[in-house]
Image (tube, rainbow over all chains, first blue to last red; front, top):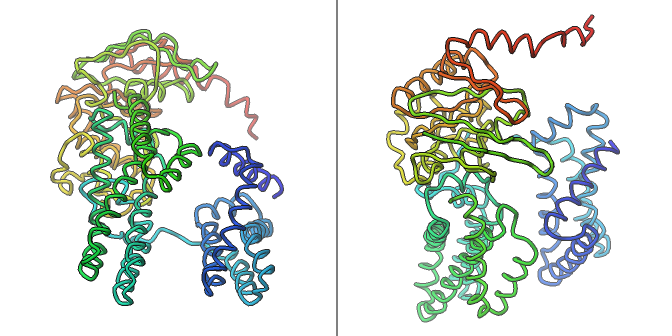
Length: 305
Length: 226
């Protein structure tokens, strides 16, 4: 068991290193980020406890994946297997537990501890046969796979748009629109296997154009119910809606280009920093988009020419 | 025709392919055999253009990769993509329409289920179906029979024969000698990154015996099974 956790530690360090950071710096940023976000969350809403529990449990649920646990059962005796499951769940919830103790939120703390204990006995199988339908069949694959993983976020965004209309809060409507775009961006964070670039009978430029057109087309499709809803009810502010929509397209294009400029690696720290910089100073996009484009072309040439 | 000249490939200091020279003609089936780690998959990836290499791979086409169907040993699937969508992806990538997908689903795959939930053999059959629907001129099939049930093995063998009839170039690797015997015109033996032997159909039996003798030797005795 000790060796298993030593391996997990090594793997975690490798993930941080792949992101372009020294592991120690990575841990430092994670702790600082977690603390800052926790304080922010608790200062913003009275339901922070429950959001906190939901986040922690969703992280533990990832450890309930059937295949992974079958492998562990296969490798270890029953006693050690459950020790590993308990230990892993405890490690995952530790930062949440510390913060809940600090906030003196003992009831949520108890719920979290009980959930973590119970979930050590749960294995979630993803072998069910139901396929979530999507309208994105014609141009695979980002929006097909992404939508199936995040459809509930889109539903939440639509609900927020309806709430924004019912309470007359335009900003909430814009937030729901941005939520759809942010979700679309997430579809482009993971690099696909080289084979799925190699198969294209396109030049690097055409390949990128194809990806951008698909992204814009399908993100429009997902945003349309929100645009129509807030566009009709806040017609006097329709220009602002279109402005945010256009901004969404520009950032979507930037994210797609950033993805392929880092290919076959993941989007790394410098690229993320450039995108964040553009969020504050969009004018920088004029220079950053061509920069990412040229790098993407260079990377894609290896697979497409 | 595909002509490979002075093809070499190294991963760091490990030389995987060493100055390989070989050519593949249209309407022929070529078998590549060799031990695990002999360089077969790397060789296939170089032909497909998925690896950088030194040397040349030339063909009748301006860009060989756009006319090549490459079946990987372990095809990769996205986690939430159905079989039908995978076929659509591969066809649209080549600018082809995925026509009559259900009719052409000769392995009776559950195309509306997520491909990642398929068994090993089903994944292989789906990848093969998709590259066949791309209508390629050259097929590089890395272990097409691996993990596939006996009925599908028979179908795949017939597919390879049909592709040969259609004047396609087919290069396959397999660890199952019988399947190569049934399909290939030539077998090339790859060892430590070098093709050490070329065998024509009439000599397949001799090659099989030689490989058995060489591979097994007295290794079973070394196990000291009791």
